[in-house]
Image (cartoon, rainbow, N blue to C red; front, side):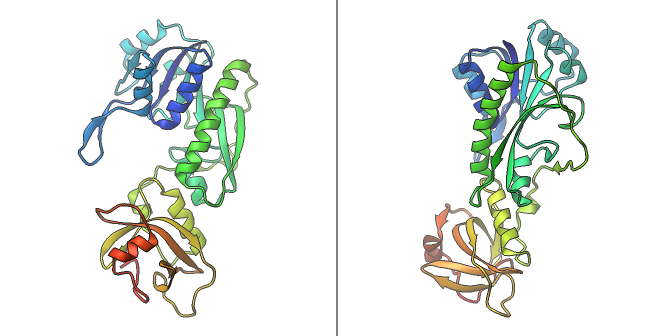
Length: 308
């Protein structure tokens, strides 16, 4: 098929590569403009653009898709379908109906659960046992279009947003290739009952509230790994916690956030209900290290209080 592909991060790049390897012609790749990133704030291309350059594809990085001249240029490509994956720009109605087979979106959830920008992280935060990928016929709503194909993926107890992202990216790539092979597919209208919204993560949400249960805090740590990283304070300084595990009931009377035990170089911290063993941490300006290495350079001792 003759495709237009619109996407930006790694999740989308995995799908683009699968479409190319399946023999589809990608007439144009749309991706977000280059932006400053990293400590040096150097201009950085998206993962999709980097792949498109390697595969020698035509690339466009418009700041908006509402320019009529640009839309006319897209129309002249005569695309059969437009595939969208985590692009980051709203697709106007004039583009939704332009390709012969419309616009198909690869969404990392089992719609209508977790419509929106952060479905992977929200599924972990909510304690969902499973999620998946939906191929959706796009409409003007936010992830409200009819579904075409879905695949369910289990969320393991040690999955982080990073590991779950990688699973879903692979599944999404396979599913969009299958969808194009099996078109036309029967669309299934979404039932808005039970729909949930996956709002974009904020840095404020990354701060650990030790009065929550150990299970809830562990979900938060997993959902914010690899970005932006769940954090707490130690002697007024931020410390990121990258990996932990619930450790059962805590000692009676221990205030949430208190280090109640250090065993084999691993601190155990009281939560509102239960406790957590902190396995991988990072101090400001430092590297992610195992708990034993962290304790060698930071004053984390029995009885000290995290979160203040």
